[in-house]
Amino acid sequence: MMNKKNIRKKNNILNFPNKLSSIEKEIEAIIFAAAEPLDIETIENKISKKTNVEKILIKLKDEYLDRGINLVCISKKWSFRTSPNISNIMKQEKTVEKKLSRAAVETLSIIVYHQPVTRAEIEEIRGVAFGTNTIEILMELNWVKPGGRKDVPGRPIQYVTTDDFLSHFNLQRLSDLPTVDELGAAGLIDSTNIDNAIFGTGKFYKEKQDDKKEDIYSNIDEMLSGTLESDKKE
Image (cartoon, rainbow, N blue to C red; front, side):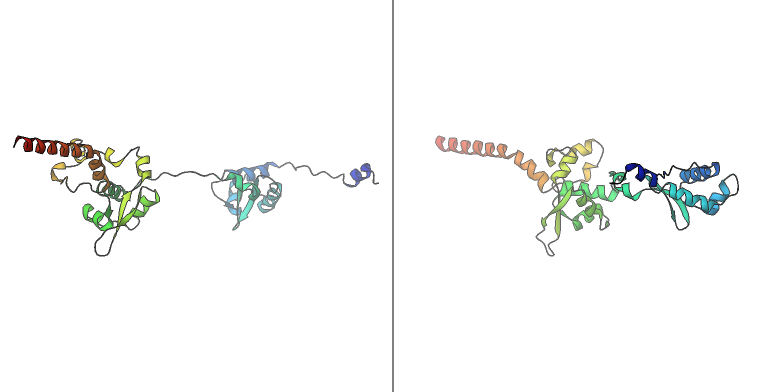
């Protein structure tokens, strides 16, 4: 069995990190502080005295080889980069909020109050054609979805809002949205030029009608009662 002391004698070589000279520290700091990769000429113009910059860069590259940050040379330009071995833990997911375009906001408003509505009808109401990706953006947000086809020549797709739209805007149902009169009273629209009969179709007015079903039945009961009383008098 081999003695451990003999192993130590054979492998008694320790590699301690070499201390950096002042000029090497300068080059290290210049690359670290740079906003973009630097070529050798740029580094030479920034250091306090002339030296073999390329040789020092190679030395620094070896110094950083097994660290979390590596010194790399790409297209003859030098910069510090995160080590590929740990790049997976440096990833960060970030949600970027973007404002909807005016066309997307107007399109959404039209769909909300006129659904189900086709692309051609949206363009007719807006008075202008819109980009092909406007509805697609709303669908990507899952605020709008196809709602069947209109029974006319060509059978165009109709669009309606989704439950995610209600959830995002904290609405229980579409009928919680402000009415034409309320929008007009708030000064948001000129309600004098709007025909209430065509402003808002489909789901919006269907919900309104559902709310009035009980009143409709009570009116029928009153009418029948009145008819029976008239028959008795005769």
